[in-house]
Image 1 (cartoon, rainbow, N blue to C red):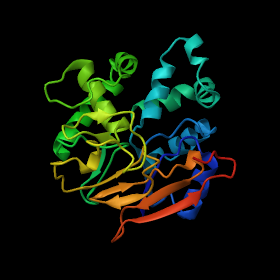
Image 2 (cartoon, helix red, strand yellow):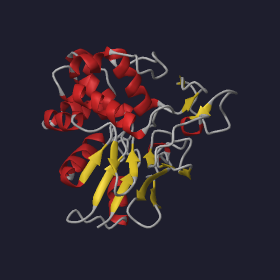
Image 3 (tube, rainbow, N blue to C red):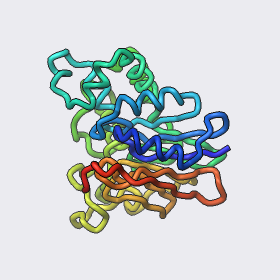
Image 4 (cartoon, helix red, strand yellow):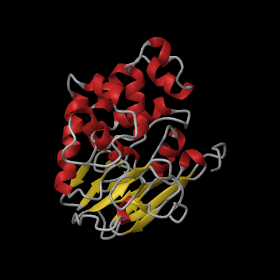
Length: 278
């Protein structure tokens, strides 16, 4: 049995197929962790969703910002849905769209395996959160996404405020702040405020900003964290963080990380030649 975490697929279906072949993935015994952003930009988001849905008993998924955006677009009026890009429109117009989207809406914000001592999120964790706090907040968001209030949340989750987590937040402000942390965060200031416009490699940010996992005083969590979302960071291993968004959709690679060995091991395949080079 092997357990692999896979970085941002973003609709890159042939690369996902090749990566599974490279891993010699056996659905009878192996398991997959997808760190989010299954869809958008790659051109074959529908095929990616169908493949992972077909492997749903062997897979866990944490939702990314592009996945949540797709769910939000699906709740809009037909005229608004028609204005989305062709890749996502193919998902929305597919005969099995409702099945795929209902399954996607039921996925997680955070995955934790105490035996592996690995935690997976799409982007990151608030510097002030312990693992227990992060799990609690993730469950709050998941309950709302899976419940009768999901439409209101999907309508109101967009926006950059509040930019900092506080336990005093409530209602949609609390859920929006949590979603931004789990799915959009790269850099924070020393107080944990997210800087949404900073997207480059570490060293390119303005003074006073830190990668979320290097903020002074960041909580110790006794777990290793695997995440994606940050293609300019690329493959990274350090400080207990394993970053696996290697920019496949931009002409980079699609990367997996084996989680169950003595030491985590990266395995990657190159993007298709037609992908745009970052």
